[in-house]
Amino acid sequence: MYDYDLLVVGSANADLVIGVERRPAAGETVLGGDLATHPGGKGANQAVAAARLGARTALLARVGDDAHGRLLIDSQRAAGVDTVGVLVGGAPTGVALITVDPSGDNSIVVSPGANGRLAPADVRAAVSLFHTSRVVSAQLEIPLETVVEVVRNLAPGSRFVLNPSPPRPLPGEVLAACDPLIVNEHEAKVLLGEVCVSEEPADWARLLLAKGPKSVVVTLGAEGALVADAHGVGSVPSVTVDAVDTTGAGDAFTAALAVRLGAGASLTEAAGFAARVGAAAVTKRGAQDSYPTAAEVEALCCAHPGDTPRTPGTRSDSVPGTSERGETL
Ligand code: RIB
Image (tube, rainbow, N blue to C red; front, top):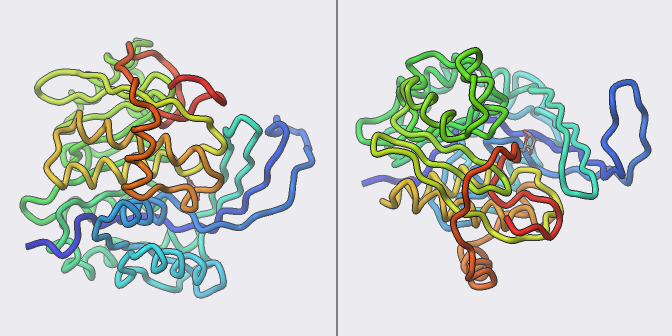
């Protein structure tokens, strides 16, 4: 009945990455390693992550008519993503300037470029993709009015997954469509604003749920993740890995969660799988280059058979599995 397991609507960026000993403070200049250019962007990353897991995936995005745009389209096609929805032109391809330190943590500045021109009309023109997709996912590196149009074009019975990154206040119409809304600590606090008086992640999950989503996932890095829906709040364990580069691991988590939910898994089961995919993604450099196949996720599980649920804490890492090097997540 569905042609696609997942339709991703979102950004595509060229990631310009420099390894540094220490990420610079305000007003500081640091020397780094050689510049590397990778395909990235939260939407393009999600699409590649889903396809690599074996999901039938399409991407609705906009890139510039330039070398970065061609790099991005090529990487989507190489992963098996249907690029029929990738529009070309209007502005230069989006660019992300990324520094990565030896612990694998990063800092990112995004110039949206063509992502900022992905318009509500582009969503309406791609309505056939919405009618043939089991799950639709989005992020916030594209205009908010475009995300609003996405939820207005969801087909009956399809599921909407949102990672509000970078975070900003969301209209009730978007919140109500989320199943789930996926946030890390920073995103949770921005969305909750003044309402957030607690440092307890389970409270963030409950407060976010009260804003209208059908379900919520709070990722807590080394502390795993929380899932919340009408049945209550539960925890999901993390996985032991050596973190090399956390870039794009949150996108892999979201894609894996969306794919598993579409396959009929419960929110807890899907988040557990997504945590393993996110953990695998931090063990390699880059975003899309680090994403595992289903077989590689399986191998990671066998390598860490003793993973157990943990008490949720307050770490702000965006993905269960993005810890200090060698720490048990
Ligand atoms: O989530 C990681 C992504 O954020 C990078 O690929 C970069 O392009 C930015 O969008």
